[in-house]
Image (cartoon, rainbow, N blue to C red):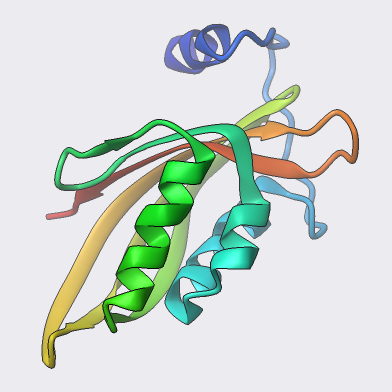
Length: 149
């Protein structure tokens, strides 16, 4: 709980004392995470861009940092244009909502085909999402990926 309060403070938002149960509709944080993985597998850059907060940041498993929506979209486009093919399954390990901030902890596994070679993938993904005040939709504010053991 303390870590979540720190995350919320970092993005300039306040948090209520108790977590709210994520809604099961299409605007829930977990649904955004699932649609993000599906769009990534399909190289649907337009769909991915629509899920990102303008202030999105990311840290990849390789330690590289992207600090803007434009840069993140360019990275995804480069991966898709390289001919890499990804097929992942997703498990939501934890999802909590604190007012207009939420986080999801995800486990992805699958395969990636890069330059004709198939590679097994197994990653832990943490997403911080922020609810858009204009339309109530959740947008991805931060993505951190690490190779899972």
